[in-house]
Image (cartoon, rainbow, N blue to C red; front, side):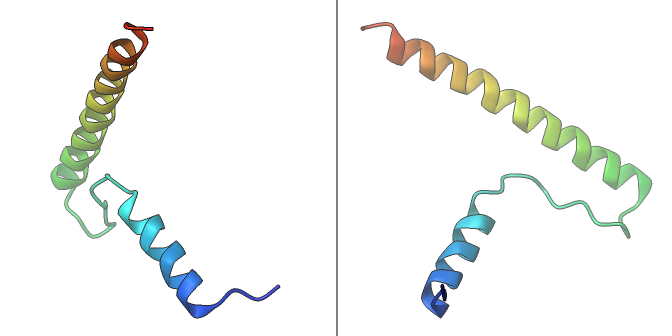
Length: 62
């Protein structure tokens, strides 16, 4: 089974746009790496809380 060039491009675009994390590079300083880890963690917690409230709002009327 062969995948066309357009399908590969579409898959790559979807894969990269779904990422919300800040990339952490090995050449970043110690402080910069830690701040990026903390920011990514806070972002995940925020999205989890937001998702819970959206689920609660959607499940409420039913």
